[in-house]
Image 1 (tube, rainbow, N blue to C red):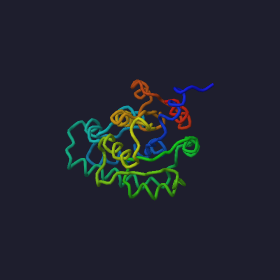
Image 2: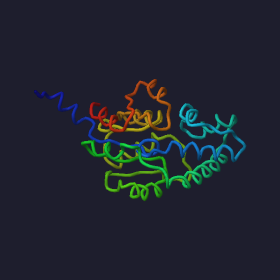
Image 3: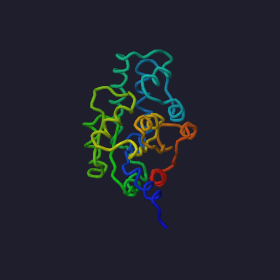
Image 4: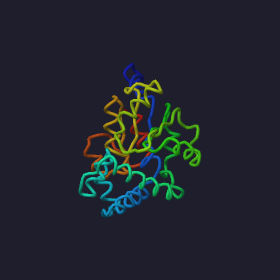
Length: 223
């Protein structure tokens, strides 16, 4: 039996925005390795994956400052960011999608797009490499030379270009920054535990949490 309220809920979140790094792309090991390349280049210590997941946050400069135990200004962060990305590119050829990424993408019934904080001109050809070309109505990566900032402004511009309002959208990502970005535009969010953030931190946020991407879509369809 149907009723008006049920129909409104069914179409309220018709567009899904995917995060890339740590969500569709299973690159935690590579990110930790590339981060350690940056830390050790300036005499810092290394971190393991567990510590990275407990401490990582945006702006990334704040994360770097905590690990290095001192302030990191914009100029130094620019250098560290270049070291990170140089190391990241070397290992990217052996990095795979999350095990259920393709299945999750195909299981969403509405429109979907991709918003990454990785460089746009490298993201687009990577999608072809991973067999994802044509699956998204819009793809946006970072269009600056240095990354590491918050996602909120990028999400607002992404949705504006799509002409999708926040209350029509749900974001699937792996970080608390994703949750904050979604909240800033009135979008829903499902947080994925397989990425850069410790699952306990995600669950403590009070937002919906999923252990697989297919589960994330199941949850997103109920929002």
